Length: 79
Image (cartoon, rainbow, N blue to C red; front, side):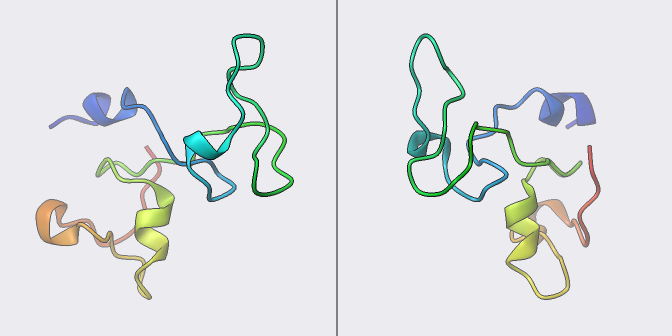
C-alpha cells in the first residue's frame, strides 16, 4: 500500500480524542462541536504513514502502533 492510499482515508477520530459521531453534525455545520468536551469543531487526528491514527500509537508505552504485528510500525511518522 502506498502513502497516498492512507492519506485519502477518512478519519473518524478527532484530535480531542472523541469519535466523529460524538460531534454535532448538521448540514449547516458538518464539523460541529463535541458533545463530550470543549472541542469547538471536529478536526481529524494526525495520521501515521502506516495508516493508523495518533491514538493507535499513544496506547503503547514506546509509541509502537497497536497494529504493529500487521504493519510493523515502530513509531509515529506523520503522513
